[in-house]
Length: 463
Image (cartoon, rainbow, N blue to C red; front, side, top):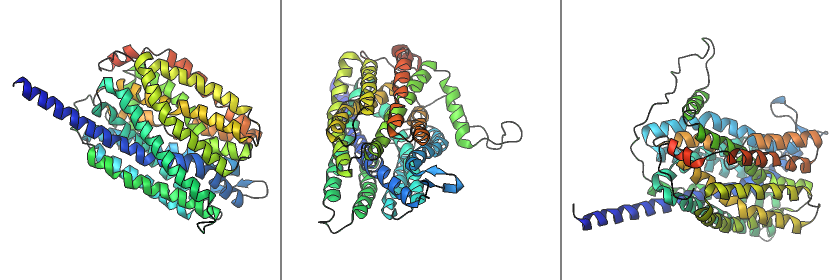
């Protein structure tokens, strides 16, 4: 084969890779609107208000007969959604790796989540149970879809490109969130001019996020390619007929999760990074999902202020993701992530002391969050992709995804329980500092170069 043929083949391969990467970015563009408009801005305060309308004289609702303070219902629903995701993701991840057919599974999960989100249009009156059910379905579906989406990263980007590609994906997502949030803000603030009530405006914003998610998902489904399943050592799912103790069956999702964790034990440094990530990302995701509740219930800020603050986060997160991606080229992904965790800790401490009714302080807090939010998530994703053994991308990313994008369960649970016990959202928000401190200490101890080599992957020059 002559050198011109080789160059042409390499050029064609690079062009196809860039095309697929651009398609990959668009799934972040599609689904990030759900995270921004639904999970972060509108649904928390709105579902809390719906639950309060359904509450008894003591401020409690009673789903399935269980007394729950109305102010904690949203946080508990987020926690319950991850339990559903934990049961489903390992099965889907293992099936995707074994079959090599990630794209149909990605499409199915995305459209289930988009449909549940669009159905939030019907969340009115005191239908808090409907709101909780749709939140659980949408969050679990988003978790499954994001697991499959993330698992494409090591297949579409060589090691030296992953930090940049991952950062661009997050930047695309935050750009979409900013764009749609501007439209949402116009509708919400001028709802009287459009002839709709405030409640109807919120429901339109919720439903439109589902339509956006479903519509733009078509682009990655057209551009991403399924690949033949790589040869790999089996981490076989136990026979469904087998019993763990001779009498009691274990749920299939938990069996597959246990099988994945057993396989990870052969790569203990990968498992160590994942543990650090699960802890500090618990804190990140809980701040994202509960910040609007904190602003409205504890600080007494109006919905327009909250939307403006989240919009500021989205705009600055685009620059933050790209900027931290560049920092990683100089200092490495691990050091850059550690710096972001220190910044998160300081930001939460400042948030505890914010005076009520002071929007300027809340905007400054939002700016600080925006600058570290996208980069800490994007670099964590790209760093983890180096630690995954070839052929096990979706299976390993199913464990990774359990704490991603609002899917963490311990953080919302701690937030909800702290509020239920103390009645103070300030105590609830400061309790999240522990996740960043412990995550920092665990990540410091992970030798990432050795971890990448142990996983069987090439070690980048800067990591």
